[in-house]
Length: 115
Length: 114
Image (cartoon, rainbow over all chains, first blue to last red; front, top):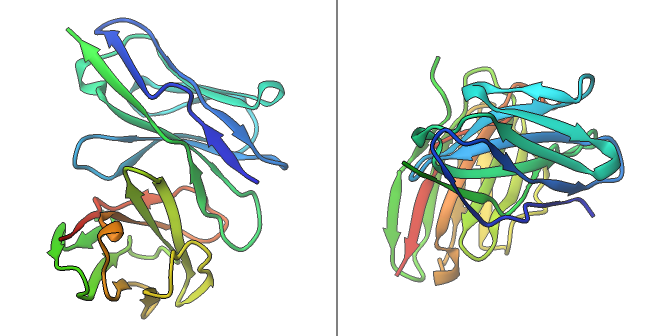
């Protein structure tokens, strides 16, 4: 069965420090992978996606993620975190084919940013 | 352009009452999804619409839950005889068509069952 694991429930980083949020997936075929961000009281905003091709993908707000098939990972990175990045981050996998195209989400990582 | 909108933003209801949650997808998006976000279960898929038909209802938790979509646009999620465990944020998302996997989410409806 498809699944997504985000091993870190909560992460605190200092403003200006680098960030890496981990995501591992389980999916039999080529996965479509996503990172979404959710600010308090808000819906989900798409940060970036991987469908195929270059395994290093760039997203909005200075985020990037790297797809590593051998490790079944799709970690999210940012070189310098801003206070406004404090939010909850969700990794998701989408079925590549089939009738549904539903997203399977990880449990999320809550990011706190210290001044 | 306008994003996905949902109404109401908040709904408080008494146990046993019926509620209707509305979703207006992005204009021209043929695929529409409902998800539920709760503390215990995280983000869960509920139902998927392609046009007005629902080829995947596998995530609906019980027969108290139903949804419809009319005119290939607006969708309504109905919960009958609400229970306290139905308390959650209900999120709607849309995408351009089935093959486009970028789903755009609305702000959600926070449902509280007392």
